[in-house]
Image (cartoon, rainbow, N blue to C red; front, top):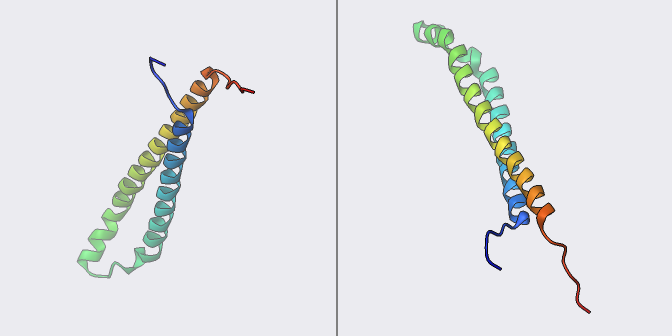
Length: 99
């Protein structure tokens, strides 16, 4: 057989791998959010703690915005791989059983 050949099962496996990566990143994000929430009030009551307390919302926002962008991209790739797998599966000729 010449030409281009795609194993749709391989596309599905890769899509599942990206889904797992997205799930793992969501867990990390949740753990990090819990750590920020738990430790936010332990900055101290000196000038350094006060300065960090002022900057912390922007720092947190930057971190969590980046994590959201990353997770969204992992989910987008997984979705695209699944669409491709369905497309290639639909074009594959049915298998012929031999007696």
